[in-house]
Image (cartoon, rainbow, N blue to C red):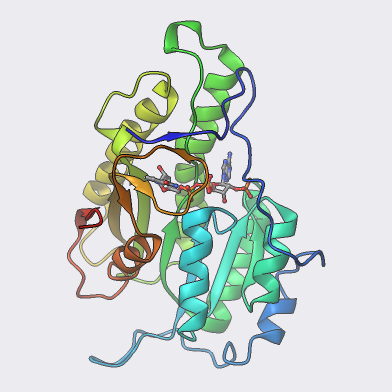
Length: 268
Ligand SMILES: NC(=O)c1ccc[n+]([C@@H]2O[C@H](COP(=O)([O-])OP(=O)(O)OC[C@H]3O[C@@H](n4cnc5c(N)ncnc54)[C@H](OP(=O)(O)O)[C@@H]3O)[C@@H](O)[C@H]2O)c1
């Protein structure tokens, strides 16, 4: 079991990460597109077979560990990124690194920014790395406020985002959701993560079942162990390198990627 130190305050919603990369300029959905050297030409159609897909990717939870690493890997490869999160400092840092940015939790604004991003760059897919680890009271002792906050962050935020973005996605776009081992393993004192993780798995399954042929491809990437280098993990028995998580996520984006659930292999 992965044990971390984050968000363990009973009665509080999950605490954000405390590591905030440098820049303090306000995040602006327009500015990074102007700054990004290769974020220019409209490429709304699917790429020719064999060609690298240079359409944009929307990363939900880009202010978090996994989302941030995915956003940076895509930018390093020249792919336009719309980074969505709530933490203003981390959004500003992503803007500084060439991402367009937008706020999560404000559907109208998110919808507007995604529409503008899609019109400029096209969209090949969405990566949803929303929610994180939590340790606290056992379920029977959990206060209702924490329960509601965990449902909102770990489950409802995913459905809200899918509803908001659906009208802006082209046929065959990928939607890649991150999940963890707690989704299939009952983890004592991390009950809200286990319950919402199981719900998130079924949410993705139902979204996939309800999608018509040729529609959005819903994928789930399950990280079964602690991610190496995440300082919130306490004494993890087994670790997964962050770059292996990123590679597994990115492999879901191309059109020929198999749909469904994939697990990230642990470090040998
Ligand atoms: N880290 C690990 O060792 C590990 C291991 C196994 C599985 N995973 C899985 O990987 C996924 C991502 O984990 P992570 O470690 O990257 O998490 P993280 O660093 O805690 O980041 C969570 C992200 O979700 C956003 N978020 C939280 N509550 C939200 C809400 N109510 N509405 C909208 N956005 C919200 C945060 O935004 P702000 O920070 O801007 O508020 C942040 O961008 C999770 O599914 C987790 O189960 C992680």
